[in-house]
Image (tube, rainbow, N blue to C red; front, side):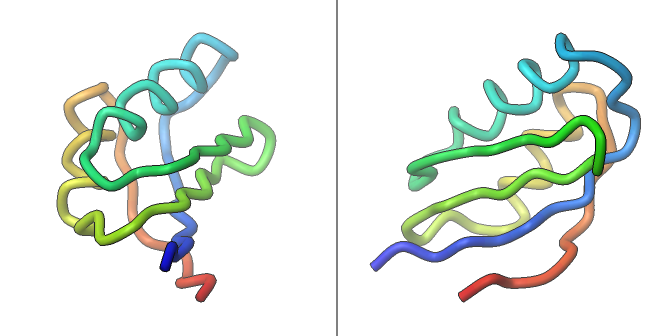
Length: 73
């Protein structure tokens, strides 16, 4: 069963940033889908068992800061 989590991503300023965050998140084991919104600065991640710490670490390695916004069930 997949779950969704919403992350707040700081530091994105262009579509290239969005692509970098999407690529980083999609590389994490268990991630099924990613939707990053530049305007709101949020990323919605659909996953099956991906650890929050690994998602945040992937974003940080891409050069951005992130924190959980809320769990979406």
